[in-house]
Image 1: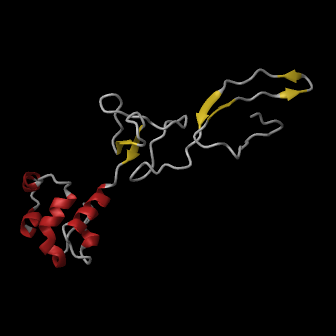
Image 2: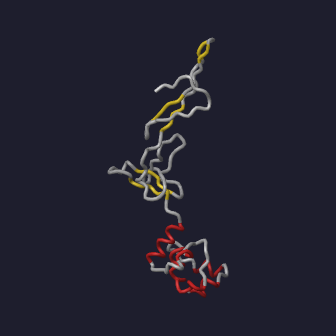
Length: 163
């Protein structure tokens, strides 16, 4: 595909999804033609990225999806390596769920009341009305880690009063 007689800046519409494109600039005038600029290769995003259970896949600056594989290429923090198709070579880095989502999901599974559900986050304190769910709150907001020693060392006695 070639585009002629455009001015800067230019936006090209109608590109195919999940396709490689090469872009370069060359000017034409009565005095002659310029040399072609350095070519830039990029990839358009796919129409559907539903292979990620949460969020979006990670893309490289050139538009390629970030491929991953255990022991070969790890995903950066905040992403999980997800098999997208039927082959284990179709693996991409997908956003992890946020800690808040995981904590809330855990609290629902543990049967915390709907009136206390909004407090089921590691960014909020537990009110006295919801103190009966202290053990669930600690379990769910700590991602399953026991922080008792750390809380004791930091002098956080409220936690022990709830438990």
